[in-house]
Amino acid sequence: MPQVKTKDVTDFLSHMVDLMMTEEVDDAGYVVNKATRERVLIGEEGQKRPILLYQEEIKDQNALILNPIAEGLGEPLSAQWFYQRQRVALFVRINTLCRRILQACVIEKQKKPDSEEQPPLALELMKIASLVIEDVDEKILDEFAQITAKLDNELFAIYYSKKHIHSVFRCGLFDLENAAIPTFRAKFPKIRKKTWTVMDRLILAIFGINDGQDFSKFTRKPTVVACVRLSSFLNVILGIYQEVNPLLDLINRNLSIDLSKLVHHINNLSDYSDNAKFMVQPNRVPIPTPPQAIPGHRPHGIPASSGYIAADQNVTLIPGPRMANGQQLPPTQVINSSLIPSSQIADVGMYNQLPPAQHYGQQFFPQQQNPNTFFPVHNPPFNPPYYQDNRYIPGNTQSTGLMPGLPPAFPPLY
Image (cartoon, rainbow, N blue to C red; front, side, top):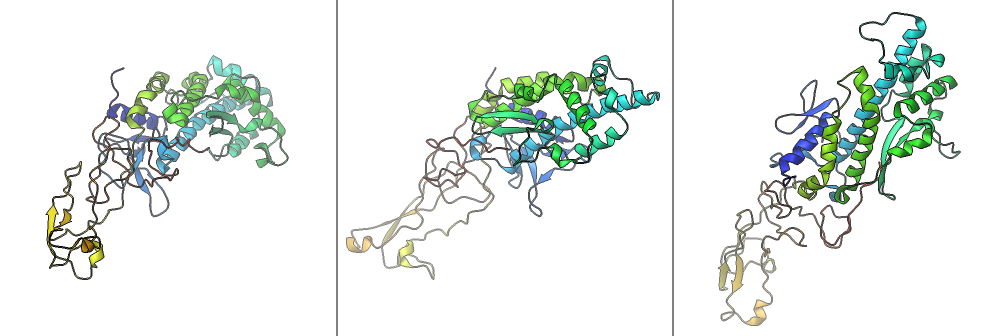
């Protein structure tokens, strides 16, 4: 494959958003609601911000950048949102499939003709329905609705195990009995026993397995070291969609997905990572610009120890270094030692002397910048769109910056 460009990564993220069913990406790269076309906002109340895809040029400093590939920089809100919406979209599809089969069973037992909205089941779905129809009644639809009312109720879950470095798919119906931890079924004490039996048979048939232990076949290890969580997660949902996608297509083609696209992106994830794994969210806190030094002048209220030279001292200004973004830094003050005793020179400081622009990975960075200007990252090979994070503190292994020599931080569990 030719060298991956930033646009290729943006296209990958856009396709993943399309899988979420209720969200899509607009022309500017913002995540919007499909129905209202309004931008999706996430965050705390009063501080919610839009979601903007990783792309060639980021102009909106207020937006949260969606780039789950950059795992070494922690797990921002946008990444949490990404995984949560991917899980919900998958589980909505599975729940819809289950309900459609149960509805067909109820109609068949009532001997009522199928309506236009509920056409007869395809042969493959009828085979699954035949396994549960004997115990299905009208009440089971209401009970199924109670169980699946909350999409985060752990009927299905995908979580990342940091210890074992893999992602796991599990179904709450098959939780092992544990006196210390209530099982999923214990949360619904009013659900009838035969309803649980119907759901057990139905779920196992849909996933093509014999018992709850067989869900382990969907466990996946990462294939890309740079983004272990995303890599293993995508491989898990691919395995699940391979089982349920043909069935989804039989009830509603809009529910099924294009597996070839998902496989394409998984195969290219390593190349995407080379482009996007060093992404840094632009710093949203403006750094004040100190006043320029003036030869032989100390502003009122500024002590001599701050670096300004008294008017009766001879000072030469050397032009400050030019930053990578073209900004000229304040000049450096040099004292003419031939006119001032060396004992006095030691007492005179330099005002905010700044180092020149540093390449990515060094342990100190310029402290002065225009609020709307950021220092470009010189690695990886794309131009420009992301910028060096200046929040790194040497020796702090919990830093949000990803620095050479620090151990890669595996993402937390779900």
